[in-house]
Image (cartoon, rainbow, N blue to C red; front, top):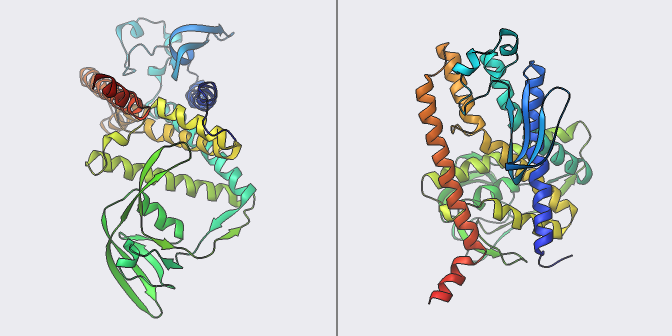
Length: 377
């Protein structure tokens, strides 16, 4: 295995992660639109000037842009970011107008918009289901097998044989539930409940902080309880059970994403920990060098991430469109075009600001700012 991925492997790995996931996301929109009789004018992978493409017999232009960081489907009549009727749309002949996005009822438009993120989740579920089918479901009971001296668990007085039932008010079924809860809450105070013999004990503790460094030199701050688990059990998973296991794991990952996002919003986690395309490219190369399993698992994680982010109720994202469609369904009329226009301008500004922040962080992670400071100093 390669210890440090080269630039060629990193670029190739990134393209093989982002390209297919963007394609299936946009294909979700495209197929849902086709199902409801909406004509697609363009299907694009990448932004910027077209570097290659063709037009099919339905009149859809399939093209590749020079900046492969996203994609889009442009439906007929979709003439503004808010996808609202315009004077140009009203001037179309009646038969052409019937094949446009704006002519469809709100529930159909909502399905078309939601189809992209849904496909991303489906891809992740298929991958995670395949892993479960191939390797089984690793289960470890939430029983204390030992505590690390000086750890949060030791300070709280947890003993060997204690069966953890809840942490932070959340039910615990497996040892992984404990680890997932603690991992993203370093330094936070919480309560842990356990059964000891025929007694129930509750302890307050502060989750420990551990700085980990992987083989590539990346550093991660994670939370640790300092509990050693019991021996894991690998349970075979059938073809029928695999989707259930995969959906559960996908839900757990989304739950961690929601919690991490809330920590950033509330200031409990620094925005410096956010990463962007450069970080994804770096991790893609690293996971590719570790082997196919690690790389395919990364694809599932990025696919869940794409689906989750696109469903956030931010104008310009799929979730922003769905938010306005929900209001339209309740009010029985669309939100005023001027309100939507200003909302989408605000959404665009927020997305651009976020891109600047994560790019700044990515460049810092690559050592650019440290090297510049050294040159200046």
